[in-house]
Picture 1 (spheres, rainbow, N blue to C red):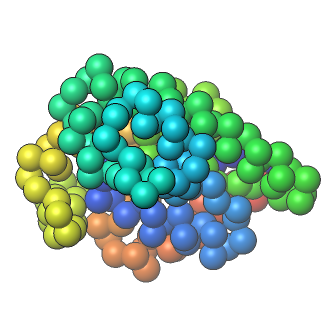
Picture 2 (spheres, one colour):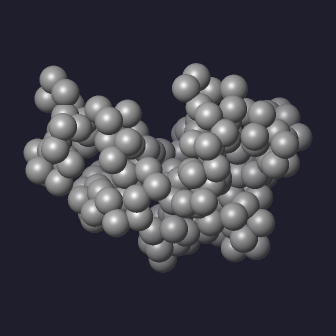
Length: 195
C-alpha cells in the first residue's frame, strides 16, 4: 500500500487538495481533524493538567490554548508531546483498517509533515504550494486571523521553498483548482502504475 504524505504551509489549499484525492476514492487521514477529535476526547484531561484553564464544557478551547502556547516554545513543545503521539496512534489504527479493506493507496494529510519527522512514515511526499502573495491573501481573509498570528504560524513551519525541494510531487493551487484537480489525477495515475 502506497502511503502518500500530503503537506503544505498554511493557506496553500492543502485541505481542498486532500478532498480532491478523496474524490478519487483514496482514503484520507486528516491530522488536523484528528487533533479536533482529540480536543474533545482523550487529550482533554492531559491538556487540562498541562495547561490549566484551557478546557471549557469538557472540550479544549483552542483560543485559550493558543494564548498559552503561541510564542512560547517550551509550552508548544509540551503540547506537541501530548498531541503528536495520540495523532500518530489514530493514524496507525486508520492504516490498519484501510489495509484490511484492500486499498492500494492512502493519503495522510499532515500539515507538519517535515516539522514532526513524519516523512519517514510515508512513501511519497506531495507538497501543495502557491505564490506567497496568494497565500497571504487567503490566510488574512480568514475570520480572526491577524498579520501577527499569520507570521507566528509561518515561523513554526518549514519554509515553502524548502518543502518544495523535498517533494516528490508539487501541486500549485495558485494556478486554480481545476489545474490542481488535473495534477491530482496525474499523480494518482503515475502512482497507480507503481502498485
